[in-house]
Amino acid sequence: MDVKGVQGDISFDGEWVTITKRAVGQAPREFRIRAADVTGTRLKEATRLFHGYVQLIVPGSEPAPESTSLLSGGRPPQDDPHSLSIPRRSNDGARKLLAAIEQARG
Image (cartoon, rainbow, N blue to C red; front, side, top):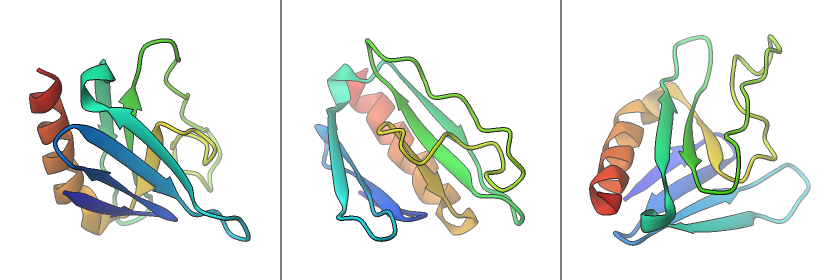
């Protein structure tokens, strides 16, 4: 199951969640998290004006706070390894992906 994000994507194979981020001018960075290690998930759906985000909460790290900048629209910072910004067209896929992760960690 794959969801296209803004400058990256997130996928889930039933056991591992992989977040791949592609920053401009940098090599892609990949972060892998076992679904069993996820303690919570957050989804802020994108709107016509602002991107949303998917965030995984793991033990030993605080969830990244939402930025209050007008340009970021209330998303976690790009360098947060446990979150990914999503466009509006990815809202449905993100809901399904998070439901699958919640079921797998259940």
